[in-house]
Image (cartoon, rainbow, N blue to C red):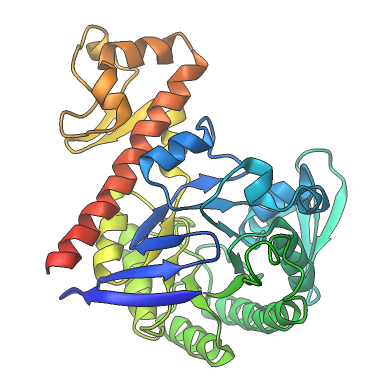
Amino acid sequence: MEFEVYQTGAEGGRRAEMRLPHHAVQTPVFMPVGTAGTVKAVPQESLEALGAEIILGNTYHLYLRPGHEVVRRMGGLHKFMSWPRAMLTDSGGFQVFSLSGLRKMSEEGVEFRSHLDGSKHFFSPEHSIEVQIALGADILMAFDECMEYPAEEARARESMELTLRWARRSKAHFESLAGEVPWQVELGGATQNLFGIVQGGMHKHLRKECAERLVEMDFAGYAIGGLSVGEPQELTEDMVAETLQYLPKDKPRYVMGVGYPEEIVKFARMGVDMMDCVLPTRAARHGLLFTSEGRLNIKNKQFAEDQGPVDPACKCMVCARYTRAYLRHLMVAQEPLSGTLNTLHNLAYYLGLMEGVRAELAVG
């Protein structure tokens, strides 16, 4: 991976390019979440038309179904789902954290029961890396513990220390298996990239310590994890601002699992290069649309005969063709097309916000 910063804004935002094996990504960037090998309800060609340059795959879900070895035999997730651009896979740590009563943690890793059939499985840092290598994403994440909120300092430190030990194991195993990527020969010997994840709960000194110790391990990039787990938005912003100052300026910086439109714009202007969130796609399936005029619940009766577009300021394929009345009809009638059109608009809005920040930085 090559990461080149072109401009830096007054607040710390960076206009940069991240050149990955499958695609050169312009940052700051929002990454749509494709949990099970698909951004729900949206075909890959539509994602390309929207300008999505990098999407996420979910290690936990793909491990359970169809299975990482199946994906490996299909030539990796890019080939399997016909996605030619960049991809990042998470470590599975957050999904395992979400299982709560279905998991048992130890120094070695996490034993958990599948939410699909109750079968037992075990994820260690080494196994998470093996699964992600088989999936073949451009960027892999070190296995970490995502901690609950609130948490006392002692609990946060214990979790941080475990995450750091797991990060070291993740990196060692990743380096030992560097030649096993499904697409490596095809792409002229290109390799995957491993990011470390900063934890530490809502304690600034722990975030600082975790960031500094991860930087000593020398990852290709760094993520800020353990946020958007129930804490107030102001606290999220504090933790991001605190952590950013200890991360290298010449490597990508990624905030995981955020957020609302105003949040991603603020973080991009602060110097965050990458963000992801299920919010625009999940909200779309429930009829919540994001616009330049605020949030809009398309199910509301007031839109039953509204012939205007979702957002008059939006140039997406949905706003160019369909009315609010039609989108409301699809939603009320529970037509599958509703989820597709709503999702296309929300993703266009989120991707457009990042395009706007990049343009600001380019002239700033």
